[in-house]
Image (cartoon, rainbow, N blue to C red):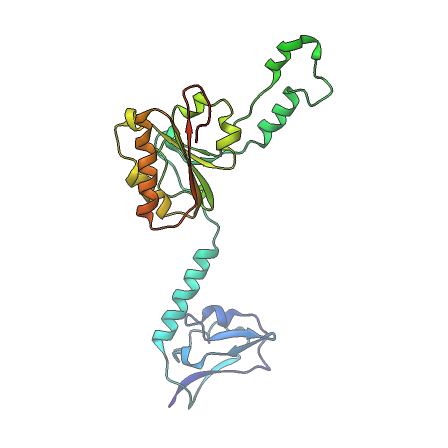
Length: 260
């Protein structure tokens, strides 16, 4: 069709890019240091770019050109905005709730350094205290996130992405002495007691497993019957999530032994 469209004099063009910025439709690009009308069907022929040119290199002309495609322009704008939003730096959300429920990732790098020093890996370890030297040993926490209580953890959190999930009964960490190194290490931990909380954890655990990229699930319970509620909820959550995830159950005796 014959219609009004812009014409760019490349000899006059200095490649400043002001016309490309002024073109709200995105019809103009800077190519090899010169402005070019690269998408004729984006040009609406209204000439917002003309007054932006400092060297008067843009004018109107009547010629054969594809019709202005408003739908294509709007789609390109939406795609550009979506890309800019995706690439924009993410701001940390402002938290207004109870400090005890604020989600955060925990790093133990500094604590591990203190632990190594205190446990006598340096030259200052004093062995003259005999058995009392064991008091210098510091077992650092392996906890990777906060909070840990099933009722308090969010359904979705960055630390759940690719996580090995540990679902543990409250008492297990007290009964089994090496709980941090054996179970919590390299796991995202959630804990609960079905007897004290008097709640079915199935729905919450299902949402956590279904809405995050969980790699594996480890369930640690006590041998007492009431702990069966936690195991039952975890297994039902795995089924309800519709995912096939490796899982294992460990049972701790009241004497602190792993019964499996």
